[in-house]
Length: 182
Image 1 (cartoon, helix red, strand yellow):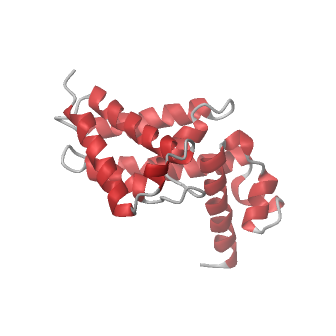
Image 2 (cartoon, one colour):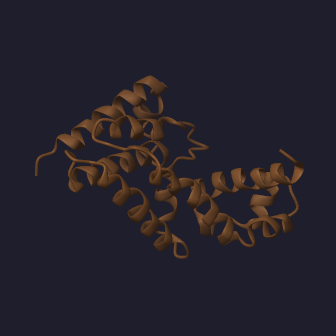
């Protein structure tokens, strides 16, 4: 990887952390540049604008769903993995966190909601035969709920869980969501 590619990657990684943890409108290009330890002008050079950089993180967040085989047999483990991939409360850079922090943003909220529906919900539902749309939506609601309980409410019993315990809890509530008959 040459210097230019390293710089672009560094900008992307720091922007992703900041956007996904604090929300698009709460992050400035100066904050991103400072976190990446680069000159602010390099953001425009590589991504054209703050919005262009945010859109790059969205592509990263949602484009995977076009190429992955998601089905009734693997969806729970996939979501357990997504939520446990980053348990760090200060740096929880998960897709769930992206959605929580940006879906109500006045600038990018509609973009996030539309991509979430189109790229994740609709794509994933195509591969599901036994899990209904309501059960899928309940799964997403539980993921958002547990993430918020840990991050925002600082629920002591959830914060203190080790990774394997946390995965067990997430697996349990997701199984509850898919067993709902309504």
